[in-house]
Length: 295
Image 1 (cartoon, rainbow, N blue to C red):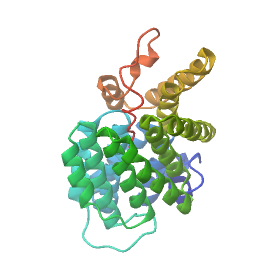
Image 2: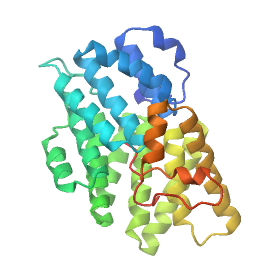
Image 3: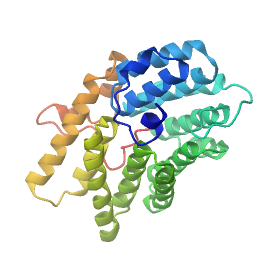
Image 4: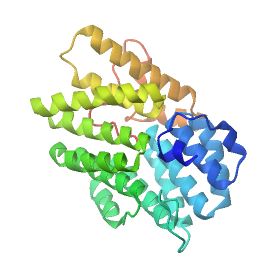
């Protein structure tokens, strides 16, 4: 289950783990979220939250992340606040940050991401500065947020370095899903930076990323990667653009079908999620180059 959640098997079938212990169920929900099975993950996570403690806190942060991935930053903020309140005192050290320090980092980074989504960048910076990352997972997420804050502030050139650090750290850990998310952040930063060299490099990163996310069935990453790539390739042939947009549409449609009713409502109301892509002839309701924040 650790390999599926944080290692080299993010595409693993984990349905059988839903009847296991608290850690096994939480790990299964993490995997299901990456695969876009938000409704199934929500049932597990809500049950774990009711139990409180370490896995109650981690579950609240995970559900908050899934809500953000559907554009529900305000709903996620409530969950992240609950996660922070449930962090237990003390505890041992875990290599994947499945411990009290990791739970606290998850909650604070989640709150920072919620603030970015709401346009409160000063608050996001303060929360980001409070995080003391220990394990590889919190270090990767800390760098994601540094890049996302820079992008949201209009400083794409400052986002490239932390995105690259996140990608290197994830590769050292052998964490496939985190590698692919880091490459999405890096590719986006390079494309938004806008120089001919950075755009060309960003497109290469995103093309590779889209290939791997498709192969692994990580629908939560497929659609934002495809949308950023479609915008970056505006000068390509219509056929190329149409193929990438269809990839985004298919993945987003799949994600929304797999979401619970609350998640679908959040996505439909959100300016971050281009649900209009699914309605023929309408322009998307989000700028895919800058509003890609999925975690």
